[in-house]
Each structure stands twice: as structure tokens, then as C-alpha cells.
Length: 137
Image 1 (cartoon, rainbow, N blue to C red):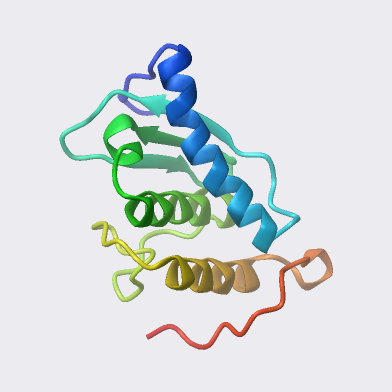
Image 2 (cartoon, rainbow, N blue to C red):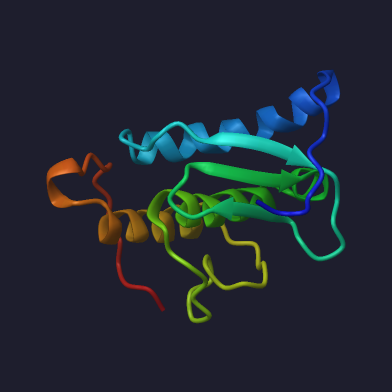
């Protein structure tokens, strides 16, 4: 799949993984129909913070990404969720989906995440918290 090295599960790795899982649960509150996501913690890479497999509900997050600020980590996790759940690639004009990481506020990350959910989930399967999405800048 890639050349990132997975960390062996240990109490320390479990704690790192819990930070990511907490943000996935936060996303599931926005979209209750969000599928179960497989999360793997990886060794640090000089160029990669995280990876997702498109449409496979699988993400890999580096220890470096997890030890970032909450705003950074939420942005990274939501970015990877858009890849793996909705199959959407990088979009340079979108602050959430651009290839180079830029931290977003919780509200902005959630707004953009919901925007992609609205675009991607078929109408009959949508169960999304009702919020004003506005438009992408």
C-alpha cells in the first residue's frame, strides 16, 4: 500500500491512536452514517503526515501529526476522512483538501467536512446533522 512503517501496538501507541479515534467520533456526530475507519499509527516520515486509501475506510497517521496541536490534528484527520470515505482527492482551492497542510479552526474544518459529505453521500443514504454549510471560499 505504501512504504510507511506501522508502529507496534503498545500503551503509548494506543494513547496516540485514541487522539485520532476521538476526532473520528467527533466526525461521526456530524455524520452518523460514517463507516468504521481503520486507523494505523506510523513512524514519522520527513514528507508525509498522514495517508488515506481512497474509498477504503483506512487511514495512517504519523506520530508527528498526532503530537501536533488539536487544530492541526483535526484538520489532518478530517482531510484524510474526506479521502478515504468520500474518495475525493486534493483540491488546491480548498483549505481542507489542499495537499499542503494548513490548520483550520474546528468550525471551518467541520463546515468543509460537511460540504464534502453533502456532495458525496447519495441523497437516500444521507444522515447528516443539519447546519448551514455556506459556500467554499
